[in-house]
Image (cartoon, rainbow, N blue to C red):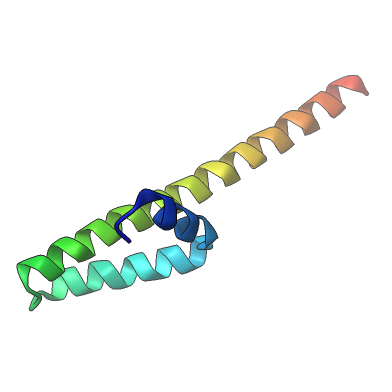
Length: 79
């Protein structure tokens, strides 16, 4: 996980639901406590990466929805 190249490819392979579920687990573990500082930092960093994955999925979905709505509006205006 040390390099961005390997991590980026693995992160891109995660689906939204998988990333979201793992992020929920990371947050649960952080809130429960009982982890060392090093473990907590690693969990935090993983959570940040998972949040980015979720954000990219949501932004992509928003862009597709906006494009679909724009196409629908254009089709309605042509009629």
